[in-house]
Amino acid sequence: MTLRWPENWAALVSGEECDFCHGMGQDRNEYGARIFEGQYIDGYLQSAAVQTGYSLSIWKGHVVEPVELSDQEAAGYWLETLRVARAIIAIYQPLKLNYETLGNTSPHLHTHLLPRYTEDPRPGQPFPFPAPRHPEPQIPEEQFLAPVRALRNQLS
Image (cartoon, helix red, strand yellow):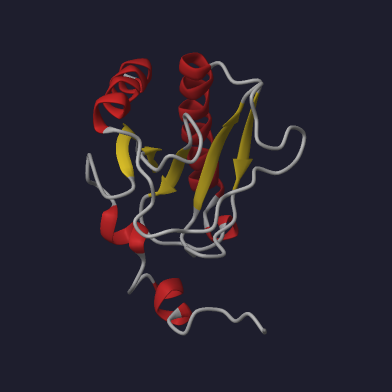
């Protein structure tokens, strides 16, 4: 079986059908809750039951590659991403925090901030993201909201 890029790849790259562009600026969306609103990024704690503390740093506006940013924008992107990362480390105290800037399924500049713990599914290896399921299993709302508040307080 030959894998192919999605039929709507051009529309995703242009931003026309970009999920991130359509979900930006919301305090809560189907993927998680905004924990940080910066000049360059929004930070979202993910509500999918993938990994405790899993968050995204998402560029405001639509670009696909970090090289499309000016030097000032790139510095702002990474400084604000690191600010969110520091809050994740302070709240969750992982053994390691992974930073993954991919864009293969969602071609919009974003970085996955993925805490790694003692009880890790693949210590010392890339995190084994499960195959996408619809709907994705979610963290129960009452369990999800306490760390959202803690991260927002840490970032304010």
